[in-house]
Image (cartoon, rainbow, N blue to C red; front, side, top):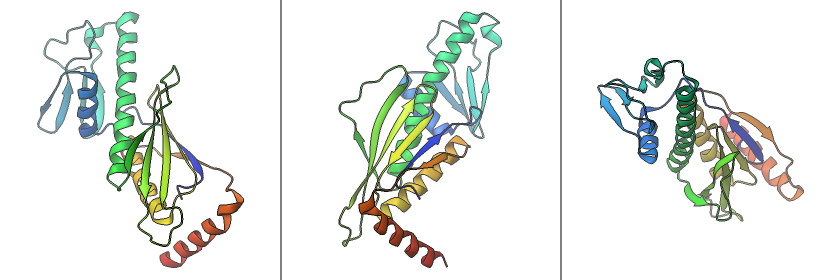
Length: 208
């Protein structure tokens, strides 16, 4: 169930989808090249040359970092950490939006949100129910992307079919992150309790 809950997605730092990596590099203006099935990031936007080698490589969704040319100086190591944090943020944002769009949701910005030290992005993915008998056909899931790439979702009432699509989209995010989200249930307002209970009972009958 995806309704009336908050979920936290923490990405496995050693795993990354190459397609989403390419989109994130484009957003950051980083140089990359594709060779066979691997993606090589060749420029991190720092004053450091890699002499034709990669800074980050993603092959079979596994990340490899090249720290040889960075030496042991804390200056460059810290720069690499900062740039990788930026990549994590963009990667997380792309992962969420693409997963939910693939399940029929649309993107909605949060007009009054201002990025700060803790949260880089905040937005809403909107789903519309196809059930003509649904009295509240629009369902929304709000996402916050933290500065380390962690994703936090928050949802209230979602129509039954929207809820199922949201759950499927969250499974896709788990796959891209190669980690399991942590879900925390919220109190269900009294007006929705019987409605959610009926939906759960119907779902159980269908699965049986």
